[in-house]
Amino acid sequence: MSDIIALKHQFEKTENILIVDWGVSNVCNYACTYCPPRTHAGTYPFMPIEKILAFSQRIVDHYVNDLGKEVYFLYTGGEVTLFKDFITLIKGQKENGNKVSISTNGSRKLKFWETAKKYLFQASLSYHVEFTDLGHFINVINLIKSDVYTHVNIMVHPDYFQDCLDAAYRVLNETDDITIDLQIVLKDFIEPYPYTPQQRKLIIEANKDINSRLKLKRTRDSYRGLMKLKFSDGSEELIKPGDVLTQNMHTWKGWKCYIGLEILVVDINGDIYRSWCGDSEKIGNINDADLEFPQEPHICSKPMCTGGVTDTMVTKIKV
Ligand code: SF4
Image 1 (cartoon, helix red, strand yellow):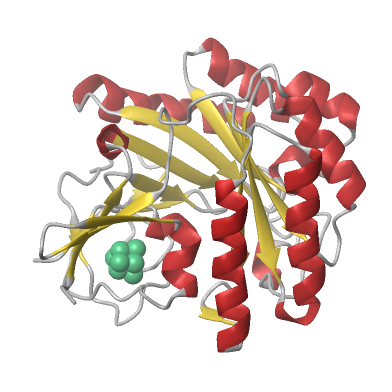
Image 2: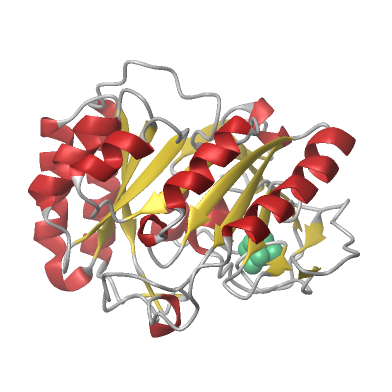
């Protein structure tokens, strides 16, 4: 069998997109057992909206105006929808011509989503088995899916394995026009839980089955699609980013990784990094007057990629 020589995006034009993955606080209404306390402890309140909008403009100036890239702001948390200025923020971003995505647990009331859907480009709703009210979760999906590109991540907690698989199929059966991904969860966001080979196999099979039965109405090539494995014999194979982890393929040491060019991370301190994986130096802070944004890809030095699904959705090329 030939070797993998690249992990690329399904759609070539995605390479020109920069995702600004911004953790705006660690305030959350859930406390999932696989989520490290530092990401939901509530010790970092939301950043002032003025600072978020001001730094967003600096990103646009550099990446859009100077480099000709397309930028998407992806707000995460904690739970970003708890931000008191959330609607003002996403409205302001839309009025400035910026596209906003969020990663959310979907727990806010339907009335909130009625307003939010007018300003969001994309939403990734994560199902957390210990806390999610599945009926409400499905109602939110059905409320926003026609206005907002909607993706659902089913976080498969090994202690509630069958419940998570059942939830994925219920979401599939009771909604349409969304994408769905079952994902293994990482302890402290680093090490995968000890899934049995059978559990990993079942997740991969369920993903394939669900993927083949999605009821999509709109094409989704404008944002992010699947990833594509390129082999040394010239062949290619599409793969879900989560399956790269589930199949333990995430070792890219010595490879060229396009963190900093396809993803830029802002953490809850306002510190800026190329990615979540921690393999590169801090770039600076959103309050710094002078910042040097990356111009070139990074060479990975980690034996195993620790950036989770987010950093997996970045081009990696064997050198
Ligand atoms: S550990 Fe970091 S640098 Fe290495 S492949 Fe993962 S995201 Fe890229």
